Length: 230
Image 1 (cartoon, rainbow, N blue to C red):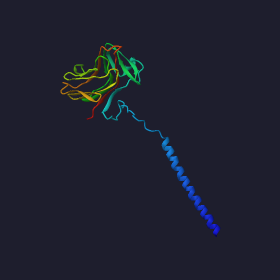
Image 2: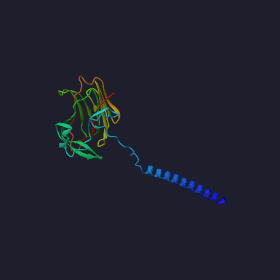
Image 3: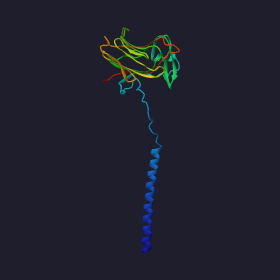
Image 4: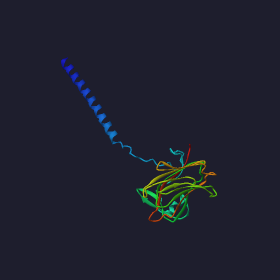
């Protein structure tokens, strides 16, 4: 009887020890699996939703976007841009593809089927020594207004602000059109607010530049147009 009790006690301790070992192994394995999972990349930049997608961005519904990543030459951009005058090519700079404007005059229109009453234009700009202009027109190309941006000034028909933008550095440009209201911000700072900016609804926008050169070119990338939802 005494031997039987001893055997039962030994079996009990062996079972308890085995259970503890199993639990410890499970915990270590779980920790190892969690450690091996890839971490989220810090500073991850979310790309705009592609045009035609039903999913809106925080800004609004994206109706046009071009970061020039798919192009190998200036001839390729005709799928998204109508070049009326001048020429451009595609350059890789600071790890991105850019529209490189170097001809003495450029007039180019992003191919957009329709511009809503409320929209926003965003792009990155590396200014040269000359002016980049965004023109707003009717369907019959009557000019309604414009925004000129250079390293020293942001200007519309009735407003202007002195700037001191560093050349050869990328700057974020945002232009909002809401009915008759025109707003422009550079690097998050408001540069232009013009009330009653338009007599009619805007149907076309154009990108223009005058007298850039090979020594002082203008670079543009991440050109996006959103329909504002609020």
